[in-house]
Length: 70
Image 1 (cartoon, rainbow, N blue to C red):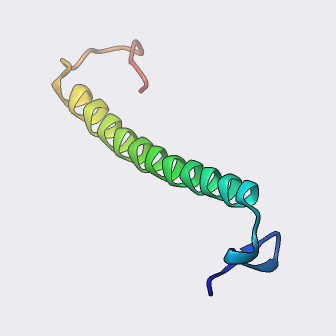
Image 2: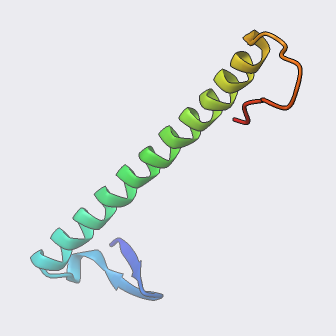
């Protein structure tokens, strides 16, 4: 039998109602999708940093204090 921990309490998966199993499944799906989105955000943030650095290096050197902060 599988045990699932919910709010620090152990439950036997087979003993849960159909409704509880359905809600648990939906919650697990949401957690998986959130993890994917967080991983994608990390990739985009890393890419953004690289693009900003490349842009800074590609810009001509300008005298004075008119600089762009990224």
